[in-house]
Length: 339
Image 1 (cartoon, rainbow, N blue to C red):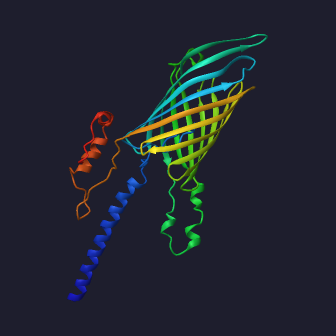
Image 2: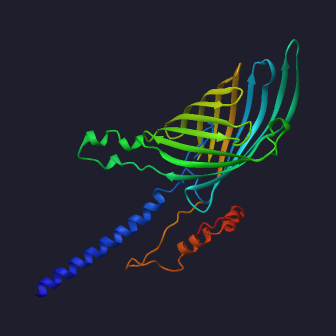
C-alpha cells in the first residue's frame, strides 16, 4: 500500500509539471503568432496593402518620390505629375489592429488638346486619408523542419497555404486636397485584404477596394502583388492594379525591387506601365521605409502553481499598454534598456 501511494504521488508530480509546461507553452505562443516582426514589414514599393499589422508599439513611415508621365489624350488630361507620397502606420490596442494615415503632394501638368494644345501647372495635396485595418483570420502553417521521419512529408506542399489570411479595411478620404481632386465631401473607402504565403519566401497579396463611396467619382479596383524574397535582404515584386471608373478604366503593370538595409530601414525602387483610357505612359518611384520600434511582447508571469503573479513587470507593462496616450507619448520617451 505505501508503495502504491508513492507511485500515485510521483504521478501527480509529473502531471503538475506537464500542466505548467502546457501553460507556459500557450503563453509563449501568443507572441509567436503576433503581428510584429523582427524586421520592418513595409507595403512599399507596391500599391497593395498587406492584411498584417505592424504590431503594437511600432511607428512606421513609408515614403515614395514618384514621376508619372503619359502622352496627352484628347480634351483635358494630366500627362505629367511629380510628387511625394508619405504613409504613417502604427498598431494600437490590439496586435491585429492597425491605424494609418496617407498624404500625397504633387505638381501636375494639366493639358488641353483639340485643334491646338495648351497646358498649365497646379500643385497641392491629391490625397489626405486615414484608415484602419483588422486581421480577421491568420493562417497558420506546419513546421515541416521538425519532420525527420519522412523526406517526402518534410518537402511536401502544405495545402493550408492555399487558404489566405484575411483582413478588412475601412478608410476615409478627407477633402483637404487640391481643387482638381475635391469631391466636396468626406468619402469612405472599404476593402478586403488577402495574403497567401505560398512558401516562406514567396507570397501573393490580393486587394479589392470600393473607393469614394456614394459619389459620382466612386471606383472599384483590385490589386494583385506577387513578391519573392532572395537571401533575406533582397525582394522583387510584380503587380497588376486595375481601377474601374465611370468614364474610363486605369491599369498599371509594375515591377519593383526592395532592399533591407538595416532591421528597421528598407530602400526600394519601382517602375510601372500605365494605361489610362486612351493615354499610355510610365511611372517611376524611389522610396524609403523606416520604423521606430518600441514593441514589447505581452506575456504573463506565473508562479510554481500556475497562478498569475500580481504587479510584476509584465503585468504593469500590459496595464500600461491599455492606455492610448501612454503609447502615444512613449514615442518621445527614451527606452530604458534595463527593463
